[in-house]
Image (cartoon, rainbow, N blue to C red; front, top):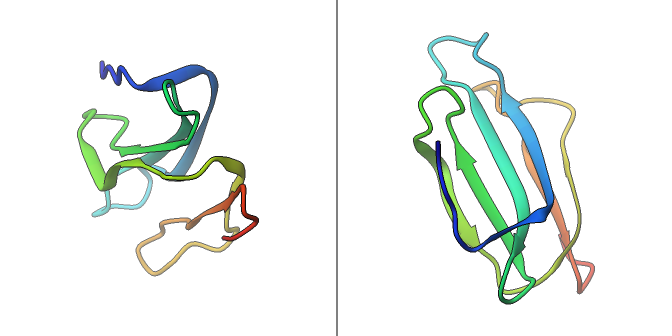
Length: 91
């Protein structure tokens, strides 16, 4: 189990960016939510099997997130890119 005290659990989205079916690459999930104090974006990337942080690990953004999604096509490592749209409508 992993506890992130700054993550507001009311509005959280969990994306499976890579399943465990692609050895030698590990499974990869990204949790997108907001910071409990500021309301700004909060992104956590981890291996769901081990609980270890991976990739960008924990990102505390300086802006609020309006939308987020995954690209349909994975990259050469079978990882789907995460696309975030912030309150200034920039990607």
